[in-house]
Amino acid sequence: MHAVEFLKDAAPAIPPVIALTGAERHFKQQAVARLRTLVIDDDESSLSRFAGRDSDLQSVTDELRTVSMWGDRRLVIVDDADDFVSKHRGQLEKYIDAPAKKSVLVLDVGTWVKTTRLAKLVAASGLEVSCGELKGGALFKWLQDTAADCYAVKLDRDAAALLVELIGEEPGMLDQELSKLGTYVGVRKRIAAEDVRSLVGGWRTETTWFMTDAVRDGHVGDALVALEQLLVAGEAPQKLLGGIGFVFRKLAAAVEVSRHKTLDQALRDVGVFPQA
Image (spheres, rainbow, N blue to C red):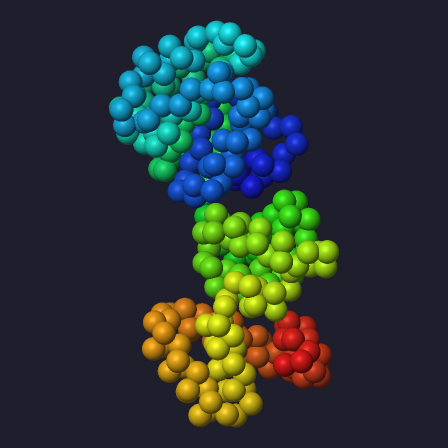
């Protein structure tokens, strides 16, 4: 399952071996935090962490089989465990057949080949939590769910799309911006695209929007002046293209929708702001 599903599960099954796979550190950190609560109730004395490159299997398994003095279970995490897994793959396969009953081993790996015997054993009797990237609709849904669950605000889909255009797809950065936006909107409890433009984008975003509005209104000279300001300020052309595309993709979509509806209704359907 993906980390998003794991984090939403109210009572997930916690087997003796768990693989956290993929490259998104934000999801891995959240998954580890959840496991700490579920397995050891955040008891530091029952937690052990090993650096994958420098650790040997004997030290890890000794820790797994050590009885906790204070809690019922132990949580043992091997960070950056790709080399560790490659080096000890055979022994890990044997460990999964007879794991310590009151300990949970977490392997934090970047690459996880599902066709290996180890991966198949984890799939059968352990748990793989994918911490890979989210794209498109899945990313927008995660943003909206995070806004509601963590910051008690509603995030408009347009606002989610704009946030991704401005910040990128890195979950940690997006979560930080959501936190600031949640505080910014306060009791209004709703984050609209205008809020993202004001708080996240700064003057560069405002200038980009002025430029696209000027093109829309036929003021090409004003648009070129704004473009020059942005380029002189060091704004990346690729980022500018993203902002331009965000605006004009909607207008192109509205043209298609207007084949079957009035232009006014088509513009509203695709999310063009009424004042625009």
